[in-house]
Image (cartoon, helix red, strand yellow):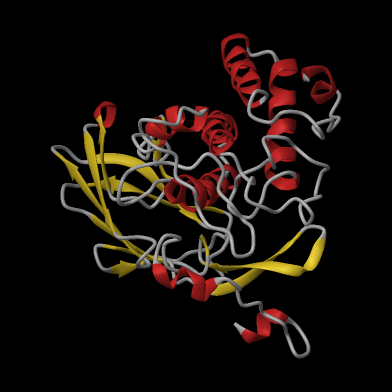
Length: 325
């Protein structure tokens, strides 16, 4: 498994997916202990291949637990796509890479997988979790029983939903990174700073960050500018709009001496767009900001479910499909 990755060779096709990702997490930890670049290179190559060439639009990967051919997803859609454990481990691996590279690319993937796979994997009524998350047309979620099903995804599923805070903030000396837009409170003890993030994102596009500190604190706040923000990004500090010179897929930096009560407001207007399958441009997911949209149908055990036996299909009359959304 590791030797081909060390040679920058993608040999993942036909390999059981989830048992490989922890090997790379282990290798990432070895690199952090030894600073050996021969341990870092396979990790970064694996992450790039899985994220860019083996993952579905929701950030999950595998079909029936196995990797397929790179960019070969069109014929691998069904009830057994995207094992939840795989995404659990990819998020752990992504946090290692972000600490190495400090790249919005990793933070963007983290958001995609967190909101579209992990958050979507839990039954909001009874608390059960998914083993696979179906991407089949007309498919539906199957939630494992909390007491009678014991797939690996039930175990990691309990950890998933207690871990939403693990990838929101990072710091490096006098730099504080706000990677994810999730209501939260950060206590940055070394700097004597508390940061409170208030938001109902992604239901709204507004995020408010409040700085609390006993003494003035000089540091740089870096806010992720998501790749999907086609309509731009607005940032105000204490009501004054800031110039945003960064591009989507990067960070906007604000360097100043912060005082208690400073307020940073962020607006991220969302828009509709299409993301086509890598091997079939005629099959696409409809996106709204960071979210993959899906038909909001009734529960499978609802008597009205028979009315949704056939799922509607978008068929463009002419031109591009995205002109119709």
